[in-house]
Image (cartoon, rainbow, N blue to C red; front, top):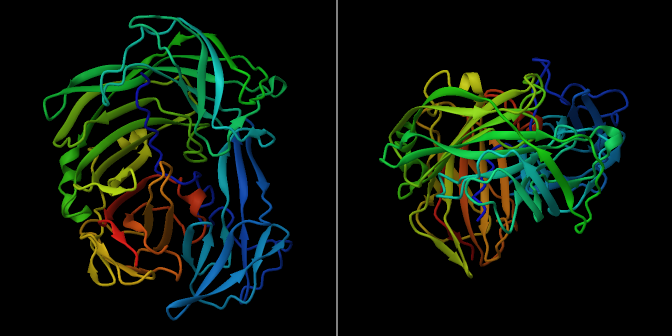
Length: 511
């Protein structure tokens, strides 16, 4: 049995501002950037910043055909503007001074800016080619493994394998039909699979470009007992191989060859104090009838160091997954393995979550509305003091003035969502997520509205919610000091530290 894999990545994009005065992509437009009239026009750009051993390469993206529009508030409705392709992006004309929503697909950003940056950061060389596959057959010939462990429980998952690279954008779990026996130190499996978790698919590897892969083995270890009395187990990288450059074009049929002799990875000890009870005490603000859900803590690599932020997702170095309902304080000593260059950084990220006590069944699928705390920072800052929240959830969530924590049929498909500010901390932004609960076993369709921290309401645009459908609302108080969704939502989402807390509604049905 493959152990559960939880990739904790609360971000939507990643980067660090190197000029403290100007956000990337948000300075004054160049003369050739579509000749923006600061009084009536808005320029939207979307550069991709590729991070590799050679530095950062900026590649402008063509936004022609991109699902982007501007919505200007007009009473209970919105006036809409479509963009014109220009050099460097899209230009929106006849946008009066004042606030508007910049909509990109299902995300709505309330802003006043005249230059909006939809740019993103990525790992790997800019000329890499990706095939739209989510999995590829793989052939494993792995030797000198740490003695293999079997899955024991959610919080003690035994051994697992991950595939990463700094040369192309790839993060993959390795699946297999028949895992090694307990204690085995080799694994020969011609019928394995690589499951690609990045949005870009499977990379084409080119030996001439120096493309290499890391194969990392995780094992579980114990570090005492949980506050509830059970064993406290964690997972760490214990052995690794950095494969030599090779060429491979994924086609869904040809097996990705993964042959290596792994080497032990030094385990670096560290101590932490995780005050779970400082999260659990906000349960009623998150949802008055909610219960403590699953929580996790991970250490992850920051490729090429902190100077460009936590860019990309290269798997984990350490995972601590807690059983549902865990409370109290964890004060223990752990260890993690890090196979990457010393120039890379290490980031800590913790999640503590609540969920509805009552399931919502749509068709044959069961849902639990939920909300989270997230804390992410450089590891040295992360463990320098107790891990505890600096911001609490918003309170008193309402839909059209009625308690949103009670299930009901709403009176309109254009409701007004309101809330009160958190008791603790000062949000710089709020994110209002409207999540549709569906019967299909796919990702729930989600719309998000990003508004400044001095706002406590959002009116949904008309005809956004479907008739006779089931939704719930999650409002996030975000206290991240450098996050600027009104100007550059993706690159600034990756600036550290990041802190947030959610309140979530009961399920509601539209008329």
